Each structure stands twice: as structure tokens, then as C-alpha cells.
Image (cartoon, rainbow, N blue to C red; front, side, top):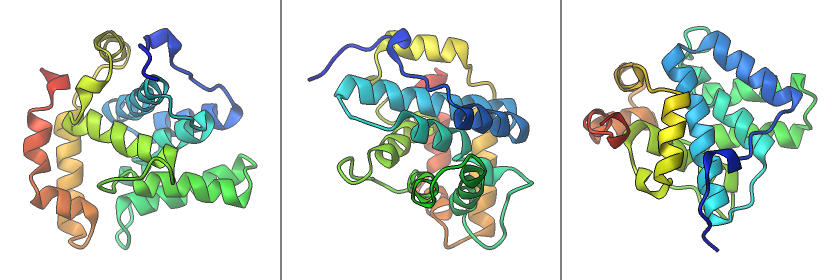
Length: 202
């Protein structure tokens, strides 16, 4: 059943792993990418609560904070796509957090799948939500499905800064260096144009 969600209704988990993931994102991301990572979680959680999608808040939060860490110079890989590099970082991070091998693998899967065209919600609710929310934040896809009040408060608390410019540069550079990657396909399909007209930046 569809419910109207307010910002204060969004579940924001507070566990050692979540606090650690936020620390990593803060340390290795620019302010624009940090805010993007936080918004990715908030859009995902708000949508899930509105649509009645059950999800693991800790898993989704950690994956949201680390989903773009493969773009950071310190973790950038010249051999694998950036989402796969980020998945490896997440696996290592989650091992340090004491997660089981199966849960570490789930964190990596969610991060890798955020670049897929679609992740079935029944198979992977966290992957589905992160793929949806990152698309919302970067290219403005389906942003009208987030209540206007939530959109306004999220953007006030975590402003977009230079995310459009920075992410366009990042994904274009990744696509050029890794021509067989999903990033390269996104570039070829005009993601820069979609970023430029994102309604969240209007």
C-alpha cells in the first residue's frame, strides 16, 4: 500500500558499520560525491518506505556510502570497471566490520548492480533500490516518485554542489579508459546530456 513519506520518516541506520562507511566516504570523496552518496541512500529508503519494499537498511546504507569509491584516485582500477573496484573495497571494508562472508558478498553485489539497467526487486531489493536512487540523483530519472517535501528537504540538507560537472567528468574518463565497461555504454548513450537536464538541478 502506497504511503506518504516525510523526511523524518526515513530510516537512517546507526551502526558501527554505517558510521565507518560514512567516514570512508567522507575521507575519499569530494564534497559533491559525498552528498551524492548520502542522497542515494535517502532517495532509496524514502522510495522503499513509500512503496512498501522491505529492505536491509544497514546493507543499503553501507553500499550507498561506498558505491562510488572506485572513482576515488586511491581505489581507481585500470583493470576492472569502477563499480567492481568499489565492490572489492566494500568486501574488504565489511570484513573489517565483522560481517559474514555472505553479507560481504551482498554488499559488493549491491554496488556492482547499481550500474545495471534494472535490478529485479524480488531478487535483490537493496540492489534494486540503489540502482533506482543513483539514477534519480545523477540523471533525474523518476524523481517525481519522491514526495516533493522529501526532495526539498534532502536537497537542502545535502546540496548538489558540483555533482553534475564532477560526475560527467568521472564517467566520461572511466568510459574512455575502459571501453568495454557499462560506464562507456552510458557515455555512448548520452548520459552527459541527461545529467545536464536533471530536474533536481533546476
